[in-house]
Image 1 (tube, helix red, strand yellow):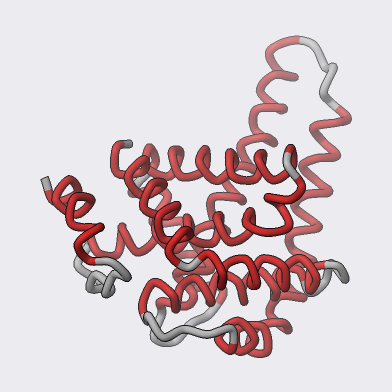
Image 2: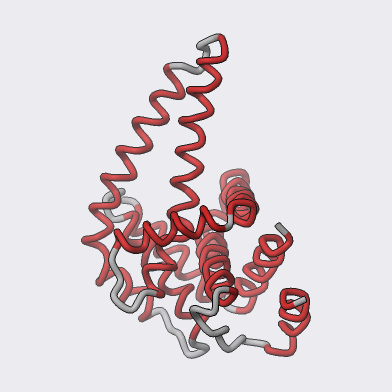
Amino acid sequence: MLDGLRVGWRAIRHLNHRSHLYVWGNILWLILSLPLVTAPGAWMALVRLSYVMHRDPGVTMDDFWQGFRENWRRGIILAFINALILVINLGNLISYWNMPGLLGFFLRASWGFVLVAWFALQLYAYPLFFAMEKPTLFGAFRNAGVMILQNPLYTLVIVIIGAIFIALGVVLPPILILLTGGAVASLANTAVQNRLWAAGIQPRPVELDESAEQSFYADYEA
């Protein structure tokens, strides 16, 4: 759980280091999400921008557009899957919200768990997609499921932090317009790369400010 809290703090620091790119990426993500069917593709573009920023100090907004061009068709498929899962589970929650007894509680908890698990899967899947040598959506979601099963408490902390970022955006619309998507993308990439470093699968990227990060890694390695 402490690793999850450290990851949340590091994601915020990374967001602060590259705030101008995250702001532009966030605005473009919102605009490109307006047609709804392109929303997942726009999200993949924002995650890709954040992923490259974690790996390459020379990143530009061209990386966002490249991510969108390469993935908007995949995003349409994901839009229908997301819509199906949300409609089914939210519909069930609303329909059985007042159902009394243990069965009603169990059903509501099950559908709520599915929504939370789907959110967690998507937090991990897209950064994993861009980290794969031969990326596929099926492989990314499968690996995301494995990562969740191997790190349940860590994932719970990451999901809570992501939910806080989203809640702040809902309560404060200027934050939603400028930073909410970028904050969640930074969190997702930081969380996935933390697990990949810990597993020895991926080397630690060059930080924007190595001296500023030394205390974090000293804590992490301890």
